[in-house]
Length: 308
Image 1 (cartoon, rainbow, N blue to C red):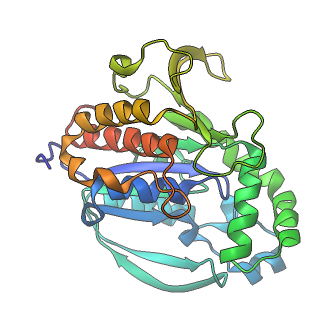
Image 2 (image 1 turned 60 degrees about the vertical axis):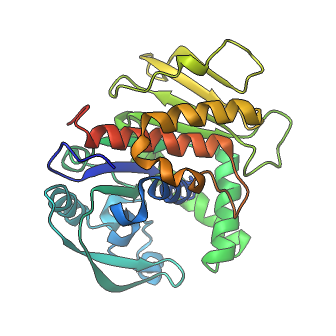
């Protein structure tokens, strides 16, 4: 990989509601950049209370008062300065706080979680900021599957939890969307209500806060080509680029897009087979292209193409 031109680790933020797909996205980006060059941090580790205490206090993990926001800020600043941290650890399988771990920074850092953009001090530490907002019915399906297979909940408990967290989601999670450079939405194709994985469509809202890659070489105006890029308006009326990649994008077209993105980050080309895995070995082209696009931004930030 080319020598870095900046003197601090590059930090990518991925924020979204519970089960929005943050960990899946993060793992693929880390694979592209190389696990030996990436540190991943989940802000769930900064919960103040374990699962039992939260139930007793009647507080959800989405509420800032349930998290050590000040320690998050401090740790992000230290990591950006190239300093190690002693990170707390929350064990989702048991709902308990366990022994903290020593974390030394690496060239790339991915911070994913619920409240990563909650304060200005935290937002100032990121080079690239992403907000994930999948179709809500899809997110609920993902959450039920994850929490029943990995976290010991019943489907009824998960649905009750979603209802209990709704107010905090609206108050604390969704407002962070406004701070993102890229807003990513995975959604089901029309007429495919049962699709939850490799054949989902994805929509990227590309805000002008970052210089995005030129994709015009592979955009030929074919409405059946599986990918399109157009000018649009965000929910606040501001102009954005809208990139959509369909779950049924033809294999050849997907390869052209992937080849273009890989050509823009040749430093990582030797890892190109490690992206897009969804639920095992099944490959999702929309997911792979999303991971590649974010890896592109991190590499360009490391090269000093743009800096905060």
